[in-house]
Length: 480
Length: 137
Figure 1 (cartoon, rainbow over the protein chains, first blue to last red):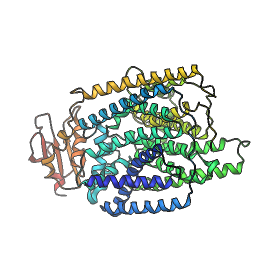
Figure 2 (figure 1 turned 90 degrees about the horizontal axis):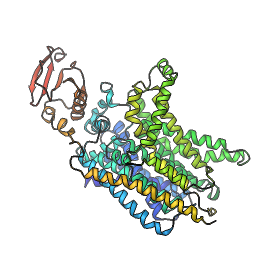
Figure 3 (figure 1 turned 180 degrees about the horizontal axis):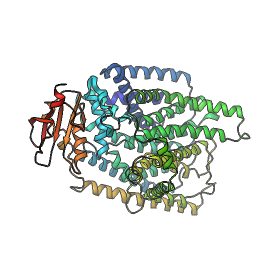
Figure 4 (figure 1 turned 120 degrees about the vertical axis):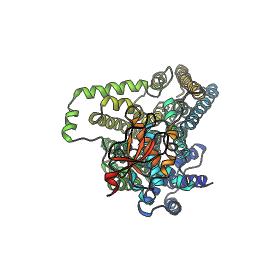
């Protein structure tokens, strides 16, 4: 009963928050599923940050904090709804063409793929109640235990005496876990396992519902099949590592940025401010999940600033461009700011120094060593084809064949949201590359044990973008 | 502009290849998950919470304790699992504390270092030790 209450409060908080930033378009199943899957992740993120902030200032009053949070979000929702009028939903701009006879195959295949993923993740979660791998118990669940069990001494867990537990790692999932445990009254290992499963299947639902909304049913089903059939995605979803939760927030950010780009010219920028604020919030949740999320957040703002700047003078007047940047980037910054404040607070007052940065002389020496670049490039290339633990045919090869066979004449990227999204992922990958370049650890060891998980963080967003792009080939009805 | 039949055929071929490739992995995922003994038995609870349940009642609720354990491949996981079990106590991998946890799961009890004295042998290689030089402080 207590855990159900904790889950309902978290989900309702997330839903109210998402609804506050959502344009008032007509309701449809795809929109409802998008909001629900976003609400699951946003609820975790919001309640995690509130629990942590409450722990910092008010001790153990988690119920009062949740009540305050929910009330504040309802007020925010009412204020936000007053400011926005209804807006028309855009038409989907073209699905992947397939004859109706293929529908049963698509639906049946999706049912098999999602059932297999569910079976695999649940079986793994039951077999490994404390997580599958060292990081689960030695980092994430250990932090949750310190937060929950520590009473007034919970800060002891973020101590330089145990640097191997990475006291500098952000706390979205540990704090969300500790909050559920506080409701339960004991530290059940089922909680982090369920959080992992929720993030896994919310990512599948979000990628499918958003593609259904933005493109059509075929693109949606194919994305669902591809994600569900990725063995490494299912495996990590049950492992109680934080790469799948991070992948959810990266996907959510990219989806919301596309969603926010729907209407600026037709309905006025007012209607895209909400999705952009939610995108900023989602990116900040990514940064509250793992340090790589902070890199992603920086990449997001850098990529969008670049996209606005590269718009040619002839296409958009300078003043319009500035106005548009302000209309879109400022809401994103405002959306990100509350969680960024929590992160800054955590990093400044609690976290110990990270272990990836050495002295500038050592970093310079590593940067000037060509063999390190070559080692990373080789591993990136190899991992591109090995990623995902697919059987017989790698998932990346399957997507390449799909692109080549289903190619259309006009293959250029025109939509600023698509250009920016690809730039975000490229910048994030470049950031990972730089971290490997300067890592104080053995570079081969570091690449071997982490690159597949870094690729996994970007996988749901990549699958979403892939089907968004390849589905943009049917004749496009003009926007309303 | 309708989609040409040639392109439609190519697209449908691409869809079928993607589905077949994906379902191969889904089917293998299902078989692997349902195979008995596929996963190694989970020993985390056994090596942490269950192993240190008795010791926990003898330790303070918070603070810092020391640690001494076996050498070898399992030394690091043994230490991490001790910390996992005893949180919110901080377990420092050092004997330089008034109370020291001894963890010797697979070997005969070692000769205790001179600066430590045995307070309690809780069985199964779990010891509670005290550091004489730190006790008085």
